[in-house]
Length: 194
Image (cartoon, rainbow, N blue to C red; front, side):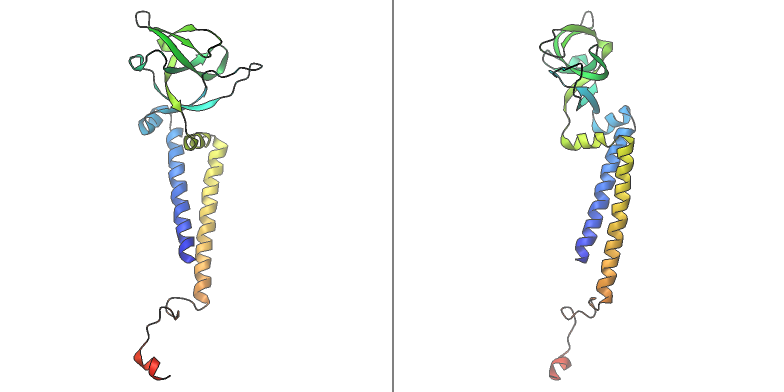
């Protein structure tokens, strides 16, 4: 039981240290996040998002800096849209005009196409975030981040006290390694007395 408590303590401390480190890398800003992850986490309205009563659902995706050389028709980019300026949108590339430095885009198969200049595009969209990346991105909210740090500190203190108290209780009950009959070294005289 003592070793299980110690392993639980070590595992939880390592888990929270790694998790907080990964969240801090996102909090340090887009440049540092890109250097560490090789992409940026973004909140964006997914392609073909249904728009009901001028409300949209936002997802968490991954973006790299805009590079027109990496694009071809059918790829996705991230940019703002006139429909709702609060969030970035994932746009599908329809065509690329390198002479005028414009790209023909669509945010929804039903809304038609429009052109955007290269400088209006925030980056190339490389895909949706997985569950772990979504949890890390959500943890960048200040309240959730401090709640997470508080939970890590509280759990570490609790497990430390539980491990120390459990060890002392085990030792004080006379079951320490020196008095334990399973580990006691017997001498020949002990058997002769029988």
